[in-house]
Image (cartoon, rainbow, N blue to C red; front, side, top):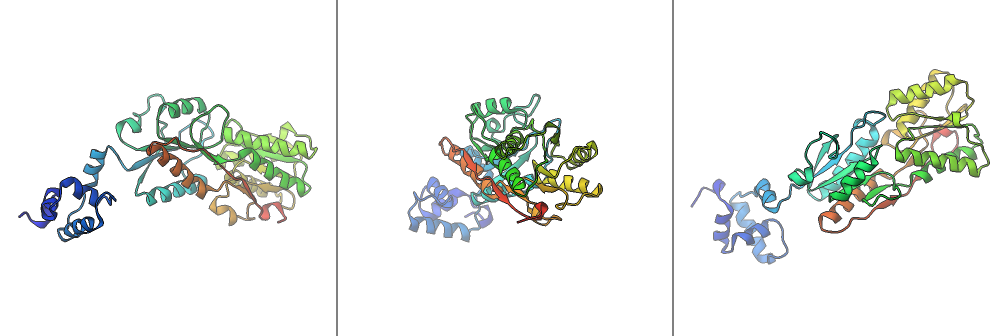
Length: 339
C-alpha cells in the first residue's frame, strides 16, 4: 500500500471497487454516479487526503476554467483600468465567474491587434472572452467575434453587428439626463464626451433628441470633446468655461467626466448646482458620496457583469448566447439642485 499522501486515482478506484472513470465523475460531482457510490468514494478520498489535480483534469477536458476579460488599448481617449467604472464592472464579472468556480484573466491587449499575442481561445489560455467596450475598432472587433466563439461584448447595440452584446440603452440614457435638466428650467445645456466612441455618440444623440422635443435649439459650440481621462476632461471643461459660451447645465458622458467638470467649475468660482447643474453617467459607487452627490444614469453594472457571464457560458455550452439591453435609470441627486 502506498503512503496516503501518495495515493492516486487508481488507488481510490481499487479501494472503492469501481473504475477510475467512476472515481473521476464522483469527485467532479457528476449525477451519473449513484449517490451511495459517490458518498463512499468521497469518504475514501477524504480519509486518504486525496486531492484532484485540477491542471491535469482541465487539460484532459481541454478546459482552462478561466475567462479572459479584455479592455482593448487605444491610442487616444481610452479609459484606464483604474477608472471606477472598470473596477465596478470587473468586480461584477469576477463575482459571477466565482459562482461558476472560474477564474478571471485580465488583459489590455486586443486579440485582433496587429502584432498582438495569439488568440487565447486557440491556445487554450481561456475558455471564453469578455470584451469591455467597442471603441473605434468596431470593424476589427466584429470580425474577431464573428470568427471566434465564445465571445461576449459590453457596449452599445450597433446596427449590423451580429455578435453577442450586453449594454444599456445609451441613447435613452442621454435623453433622460438632458430631459431632467430641461424640466429644471435649464436651457443652455452643454454636452461633454468623446462622440467618436459609439456608446458616447448614442448618448449625445439622446441629448439632441431631448433638446429637439423640448423645442430648444442645439448649440454646436456646447458639444465639447472630452475624453474619459479625468485630467483631459478637466481641461475640456476649463476650455468651455474660458470660451465665454453661456451655459447653465452640463450633461457629462461619464461620472468621471462629470466630477472633473465640477472641479473645473469650482476652480472658476461657479457654484454647482446653483449656477450650473451637472449630470453624469454610469452611477459608479463614489457618485453617491461626491460633493455634491452626483445625478447620474445607472447602467445596472451589477446586472451587466452577470449578464455577460451568462451569455458567454450559454455559448460555452453550445448555445448562441443572447444579447441583452439593460435599462438606463435616472438617479437624481444634489448636483442638479432638485430631487
